[in-house]
Image 1 (cartoon, rainbow, N blue to C red):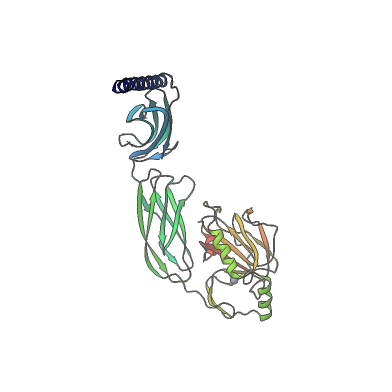
Image 2: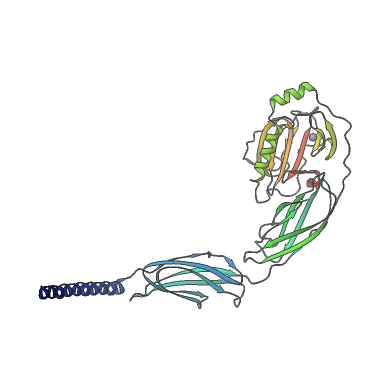
Length: 407
Ligand SMILES: [Zn+2]
């Protein structure tokens, strides 16, 4: 019994040794075969790096690579000089690389990444990028000429920097205003702040924060003085109950106009569409109600008239005050037949009480001086006139200032 068992044991052991040996020889052969025959270079992507990108002190890249054969090393060169080498020895890798640039001159440089595997052929793949290095600090200072502004007017702030293509904003009365280049490619940035007719008077400190393409940041501050404007009081104004009832029937609610204005504000052109001073939309014979007049009506109670009422003969043409896009063309209870144009950067003009509309459509781009409709008295009006508003971020300001100054 024992002899048979021992003999069987030896046979079984020999069998397993043979199988394991064969498996080892097979595995080694396959490895050798792969080592000598693998010819596909590693595939890799570089997160955080794009052609033409600008960097400050370091270039931070994350390398994600994979290959059917082990990757040996990933190497980075800037202007043919090796700046980083990451040894991997796995088939997949996700590795951050931080390349210092402080010894490089500001300007354009070439950066090359190479991933090589450990096979006999040492297959490798390279990716080349042209990048910009900018190690110059960003400077910023306000260069506005006048920091005094009256209620109902526009505060035009300008910040000068030493770089193009900066982004930035400033906060005024809890609202954030984006700074945009004064012209394309300029190193000066501006924003238009509407000072509400009822804005609190006094001094305010405004701080602008800017950032350049390399991520350098700069702050600048200025002191703004808001002065009270003595708005006139109206003599008296009424519209017959019959007309009020008719207009309520014919026009949509003012809430709908306000909602449309808010919605369109979010889609205002990020670039100035206007050029030069704004035009008065009609040939003004007289201003029947000045901007900011304090009035009381049975419909709205006491409020400030935040537009200009301009008169010429009935049904004379109303022209677009500036280049812009038609964003509203509808009838509302108080403003009657109403057209609103977007001029970019949150600046809109509103034309109310029109008799009818010219051949224009919402979404259409129109030029300064294009007809919008005719002077009428639709809505809450007791005579033919044009009610004209200029709004910045939905706050009405005195439009007449925009006809004399070039903003
Ligand atoms: Zn008016």
